[in-house]
Length: 228
Image 1 (cartoon, one colour):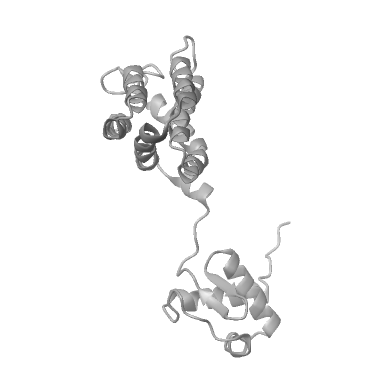
Image 2: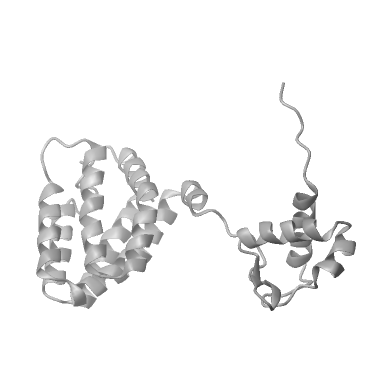
């Protein structure tokens, strides 16, 4: 039989300390009182205060600076990225793609190499391979979009895209399942999804950043509009 779990003193101290931070007692950048002051205030010993501070530091709320003290770095606990993505609806996921991929397309047009272009064109061809299931087509589409982000040569954007990819994949599958009249790789309003991707690759090849960014935004916005 499952039993009620006791909360440790450190957990309780961390919760009380976090509540005081959230209430505005200390602002971002403020230095906390020392352990000898916080201990009596929280009703615990110094070792428990240290453990509570470690917990909040691990959650991004506090930061310990050697020789300087403990400082407030956030007024709320940062949400786990995977949890945020799992809870996001399809429209929110597409909006995230717009933010990442529009900038990536513009940068790709400035920075792409001949190798990048070959990768994009191979991926573009794989998007329309016959007999694909919805999942296979989405995977091919995601691979093509990743070549564009990779061609931006910005590790932060690529890291964001890769972290986003599993939820994007599921969102795209969900979206296509809501649009049964369309084929998996032909999901936009005009029925010219492959042509839109080809035009994006051509704009990148031409080093036309404004057009590449606009084509990326227009394509992804059309996906969002299809949900309405």
